[in-house]
Image (cartoon, rainbow, N blue to C red):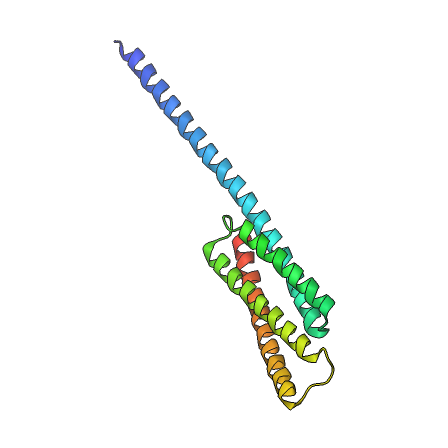
Length: 162
């Protein structure tokens, strides 16, 4: 085989390998881009639901009644479902924090329900009053906890999507 043919074969092989490598790289980039797009949408949808849940919790805290409790529990269920649906696209650290936050919100709703039950008949004795104060203190602590967790999640979500 002549030297010219060998050089041409080598050049053709190098060009083919380069083209295949470039195509493989493009394919990986497209897959990563699609993944990041989906992840961004997941984080955004999760954050929007968390924000709605926070507003609902704050409304329940400010005005504890059965209607606000119902709305809060409904939003909590929606948010929990969204977190679970997006679990594949949310980083594990964030998923763990979100599950902790959901648990905190469940506790908040349970405490508010207990408080409403104690207050519903309008007449309560000293023991009930003591329980109401205790539950009120727990509610404030729980609310502070979920506000702190939401702020932590907001910051970590922001880092994730940049």
